[in-house]
Length: 296
Image (tube, rainbow, N blue to C red; front, side, top):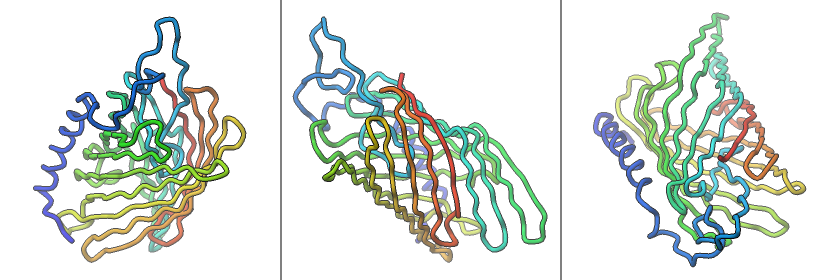
């Protein structure tokens, strides 16, 4: 399936403007609920002599899964890799990609809405070819703008949100592909017995074709993520992730098994680490990273 490239790129640029504009609209029509308790979560004022306790930080790290929660209204949240390394070997070419931090800055613009901006300030791509020659390139990464809207009320057991994302091609030709792209995801968090949480996040991507084939194609992404707390402050995660591409002449699938852990130093500060293991030749064989998240 091929989608015309020029028209799609223009549409995605307009979508980026719309996402930011929508984020600026107070979110009162979605996920309505009675005011009670915590202004940070948009659930109504407390008495003047009572200071609200900070809610525990909730992040879209450390796995590929996104969560349904949003940043509290009026708060900033930074989620970033400290170092991120990926290796892929395909057709005799070994590619190592390193991101030297990869920050996502979020801001809560409504009771259940946040806007997010992500860009890697510097990354390197090192390719070792079958003949032993090595090429290295580096530069700034692509710019991603996202808006997340929670669709369920805070007291709901199952939490659901929707995330719209547009990528602006700010990276160079080796680090990036020079194309506008977009996606729409629907994270769902389901509590299970024995303190387990099941997360799934179906996603539809509009991605640029590779090589000399002009236009865009669709990709379907999904995952199953199971998490469980360890003690009061730590959480461990196991995940199976899949992506199916409908690119002309290059249809392919990617699969990975992912493991991760996080630890909350305080209610507003979290450390994490993860390892992704590719399960077929089209998927990077190994990705390792560690990171930190803070709300302020």
